[in-house]
Amino acid sequence: MENTSSSSIGSLTGKKRQRDQESSVPQSQASEHVLSLGLCLPFSICSILIPQLRTSNLQNCCCFCIDLTIIVAFDIIILLCAEESLTFSDTLVALRIMRAQFPHLDKVSVQPFILRSQLYSSVKDRTQVDRELELLRRERVLRVFKLNTGQDDHAIMFLDDYLNQIKRAVTRMQAKKQDDHVVFEWFKTYVLDSKLETSIGHEELCSFLSSGGNVKDQHISLLISAGLLTRQLIDPNLYWFAIPNIGSLLKGLSQGRKELLSFLNRRKYKEMMLASLEKKNLRLSPLDMRFHLRDLIGSGHLKTIETPSGLVVRVVKD
Image (cartoon, rainbow, N blue to C red; front, side, top):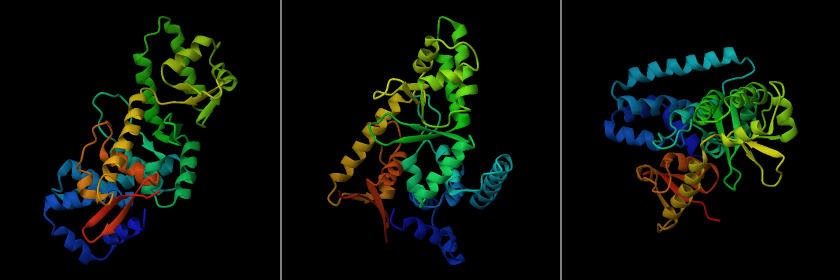
């Protein structure tokens, strides 16, 4: 993004005169204004502004902001006490906010996840993102997954959410031999806790699972059927860790990217005001416009430009 983050930060953390001007904006306009800035503001600020819009529609704004600030600060303090090696990071705040903003899906039961590209659009320093993601992964706060999209896509899911996703997958499985279900406990206890990378070899997988009992071929097949592992095409002895039930969303992700880029490319200047673009719905993706905008901005396909009328989203020329 082109200096939009720094300019937006300045506009919100600047002088009292600016705050007074914003407070005079009618509620409907203020709501639209803040939502349109959601892509470029630092998430420490968005964490106060955006959730409040959903619950109170800017009513009792000051009181809500104070209460939410306390909640967010308390949450951070708890995390710091629990994980002494972690320090406060914009990456962690961004992850939490985007988790809260994950689109509501009616037909797909998937816990919230965040794309690495979305983090790149929200935290200015990509090196910082990669470094802090690695730290959070090692501290077992989250897991990173390589997505089967044909591109260099990675999804990030908080570990608690992933364990809940596994629980749902196990519930859906109707294996004839209930004894085989013990492999899911082995997987959570011995594999996830020991193997933090995005992939694992067959022998290593069996070695970890054997800590729980006698590993059989049907145990591995059950993990694959549940969507916890996907076999790599280039090496059948290597597996990707996977998010169960995510397949339809990956299809929607690819189609939504194409639909959004095609829409903007058909416009005369290949651009559109962010506030107007956010109001549009995508026909081919269950994921919302904000999800796709963050993704495409972070991956470098789109960029934002600040104008006197507001932020403009423009296609990046090849």
